[in-house]
Length: 212
Image (cartoon, rainbow, N blue to C red; front, side, top):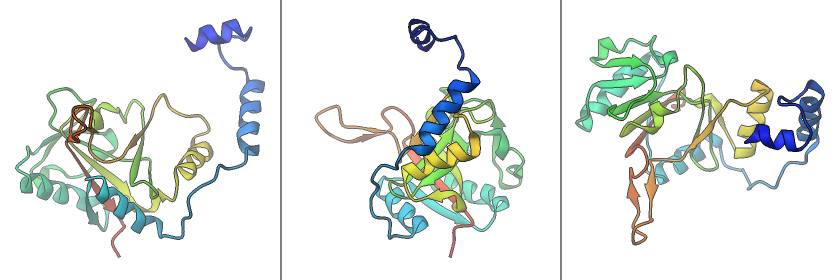
């Protein structure tokens, strides 16, 4: 569809360097939209907002502590000790905590998905994930339980800050940027909020390096 639009505009199928540079210059010169007052501490605000959205939170001092905390969470809720995960997390010692993991895209029969997160937004308690070959969105979207391993140092104040971080660090965006604000929910039927209607019933966030 986008290619057809470009064709109707008399443009080549793919953006040329001059066109890309013009877009970047426009974005750099654009005045930031108004943002809420952010006198709050980002990490404290993120915790508050995430909990209000029915996410749950856990803190670990370092990344190597993650498997033990995941195992404790799964056992506490009577969940399976098997999960699908992003490739970056496969290096952790899951076996020592009794968890079997596979690094691949999620399937409809997967019950637990474990991902990282690109950053998080304090203003809304939202996780930001980026799609890619090693970070398939299906790992967070299909399982009933989504566990996100989040670096506490990458909590930014607002959504505008998240987009700016992506522009600076990535240059160009991936195919999909996903914003995850707690478990999936809907109120389509009789305006009654139901969790897990279109995705996970549970979102559990493990903050690495965020404990005071």
